[in-house]
Amino acid sequence: MAQTLAYLRPLFHEEQDFRGSRAVYFLTGAFGLVTLSIVGLMLALRVIIWPVLAVLAFATAVIGGLMIASKMATVVDAAGVHVRYFPFLRKTFALAEIEAAVARTYDPMEYGGWGVRGFPGRYGWAYIVRGNRGVEIEFADGNRLMLGSQRADDLARAIEEAKRGGV
Image (tube, rainbow, N blue to C red; front, top):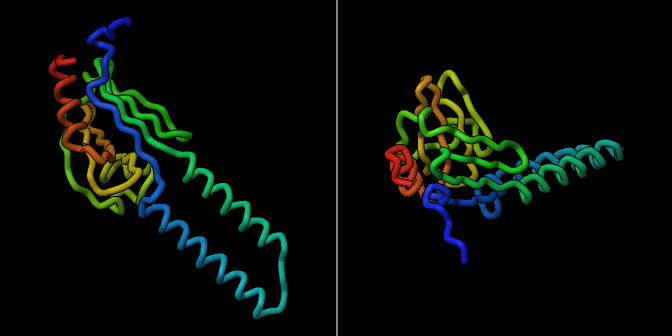
């Protein structure tokens, strides 16, 4: 059996998805209310507009499919912090660019909710799947990124260890 070289071993690996998260319940409730309101209006007016119902059904299927299929994987290794938020993005942040990484509790609404969000001038970017814990990463250029994690303390430690060359 071949041994993995130390510099190729990840210090941290985590995968998260939306299943069972508050975002799923929120979106389901919001779509349910909109759909019920539109159907109720159509019934009250005694007019069924099939294209509207088709668009609602299509939008529900697409958003539901994205919620089920999307997941975020975070890996820390000697090359940096790798984030893959399928199907939206794939990024690597070099360790040399990272000034600080601090685990903290946050409110997802600071960033506009769950998902790939951000207000670059105010809070920075956020990649959030679930919960209210994450690692705030500050970069050398002054930009910030909130990286949601169910194991925020472990993630922050792994980033600091990788920066020290402990991979």
